[in-house]
Length: 112
Image 1 (tube, rainbow, N blue to C red):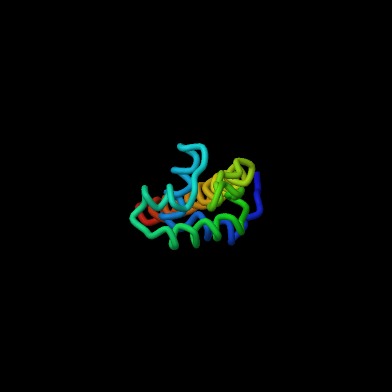
Image 2: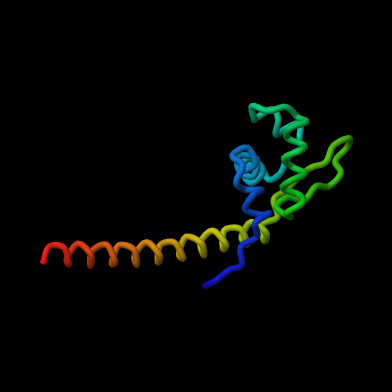
């Protein structure tokens, strides 16, 4: 299965704070910048910026909730990111198997 890799999506999930935010949003069924900042070692303003990045790539969607926005993970976009990760992992697994076979052949040639 070959899946086109979306560099912006990968860049967004490449940040450990944003991954932790996604984990928290999934576990809690959503949240605001304020509720997330209470659970993370960053300011509310930093959380808001991270949510903006996640929103631009479609991983989260915000809806007005009083004076704030409530964010939820877009599970279809998250599934797309997982599919990309799986595809890249499978490609690298195949490359590493080929490298191993080549190295083993070289080693056998040197022993014989």
